[in-house]
Every structure is written in C-alpha cells, then in structure tokens.
Length: 334
Image (cartoon, rainbow, N blue to C red; front, side):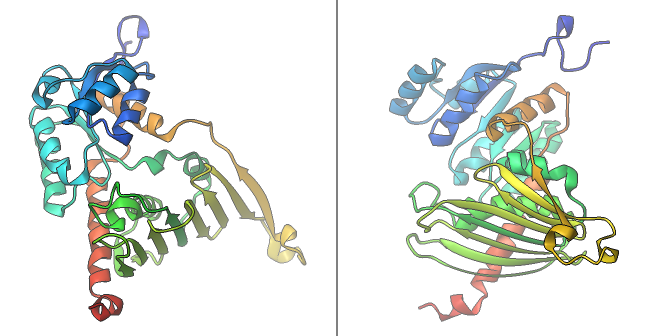
C-alpha cells in the first residue's frame, strides 16, 4: 500500500520548495535542499539583485525577480529573512496556503507570532520553526537516556558580529536554549528571574536567566555575543545521572548512577557511576531539520518544532526580557 508521501514504485514524492532570503543562512538552506532527495528546489528570492546573481551562479539555481513569482511555483517555502521581516513574509506565504519553515525566532513580537500560528491553523498548513538545536547530534544522542531533568545549565557564548544585532541576544542566541529547556522539561514556567546589559549594540548583548518550572525543575541559562571564544554547552542533572553535552562539537557524556550503589560500600566515584559515551549518527543538523520539514509537508511525519512551540519559546524569551528590564541592574543604568 502506498503511503501519502510516496510516488509510484515507493519513491519519495518530491516537494516543490523555495527559499526566501539568500544571506549567510539562506545560502545554506538552498545548498542543503539541493542535496535532499525529497526536494525539488524551484529557486529562491532575495531583495538584493547582486546577492541573488551571486548565489544563483554559485549554487546553480534560479533567482526569482519577485517573491510573488516564486510563490506561484512552489508548495513549500523556507523563510530566512531578518527577524523583523518574518511576519510580513510568513503571512504572505501562509495566506497562499503554502507550507512554511520560518527561521527562529518565529517573530520579533508575540502578536506577530500569534498571527502566524493562527494563519497556519486556518489554512491547514505545516508551520515549522527553525530551532535547529533540536537536531543537534549531542541532543539526539542524549534523548534515549533523558528521564525527568531537574536542573539544567546552558552556556551559549559567541564573538560579536553585526549580523543578528537588530534584536537582543535573548532573541538572537538565548532562544535556542529556551526552546531546548522547554522541550526537555515539559512543564509550565512558574518564575523567571534575569539580568543583562547592552555592551556593543543598543540591545542586551549578554544575559543570564533563572527559569523555574511548576514541576520543580530549574534552568540557568547564559547567552553572550561579546565573548572572545565560541561556546555552546548544556548540562543536565536528573535522578538517574548527569549529562555533559558539547553542542558545538555534537558530542556528550552521560554519567549514570549504578543500580544498588548505596548498598555497595562504594568509596570511589567509579563505584557509583558508569560512563556512557553518547553517540548518534553524524549529520548536518540543518539538513536534518529541512528533511523533517519536507516529511511533514508530504504527510510522512509530524512537524518537529511546531508554530505553537516557537510561540512558547518566544513567550519565554519575552518573560526573560521583561525580567531584565525590571532588574536592579537595569534600574541602575543611566
């Protein structure tokens, strides 16, 4: 029996897909989509003609002269434009009944994000949000061992670069970890405390948040875009052990408590825990994300990061921003 996403002979039905935005990240969307069996890459649109010509030549694809011309030819779109433009572009895409993957954060305002979620629901479209860390190799490897995380620590540090500074570091970087924490804990947020400061941009460039959940879990989340070095770390403590994940390297370790260790008269840490090196198949996270989106479009799988999940992460991001605004540090600034 043929599945909804297969063609004759069991082959995967190709999805006619395009990309809006051909900047640094949009370039990689196009590059990777061209490598995916289930993608028929129709082309892309970018408002910059010089950039469009360059990308079209380098990636051997079609640069459309207008967004409307591209949308006339596709059934699915990935939106990779600056965050303030997500709602404007996303709304046009969804109102045409086209499926959309919109890069994170879903929008730069909560009403805008709600508008996109509503439009997708009304039109019956797939709406996926580009929280690519869900597809990180270390996270995929840790997932089978996760069991009621109770304390989480994240560090996401990056050198300063002008790209992304149209929004605060909370929406630029921290939102990756806010989404991960929400997915891992799966409980209502009960309290948020945070502090942060602008340093090299008009917006907050470094921030630290403490997020408490209704089930008792706590997450300490740090993000900075004024670091000398690039770091992406996630530590998870749960009743059965401790995870140390290096998201930048896609590697990790799980130190699991041995069964019955309390009765074993243990004198060394090695007697109490066993070391599990976390392994998962190597794959480019963005490619996995795009593949999952196309599967959802074909009806072969669920949307991994739904519009509702993107809205939830954005809601928490704004709670962090509000907590920063209300902090004593913010009040002390001139």
